[in-house]
Length: 88
Image 1 (cartoon, rainbow, N blue to C red):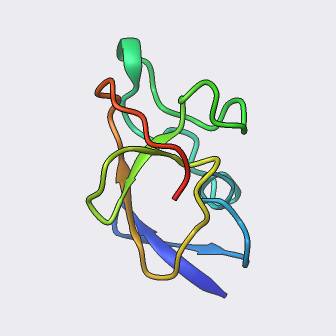
Image 2: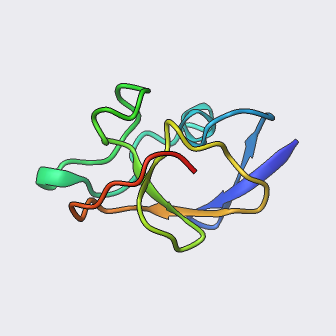
């Protein structure tokens, strides 16, 4: 099984799985800070709410629920900064 890295922890994922789903299966409930002082999390699953923003390999924030997991990627909290990038 492949894995990516979240807070120095290897998170396993299945082919075709999104970052958000893999994090949820691993028991990760909060993805870091979000807009309005809330905690980022897996909520709508379709990218509309932007509650699951993360940064992958140091890039701009993307929706974890739409972004396919990639082997050996480094996924980090992607604090909302008024910038939106959909998908990978």
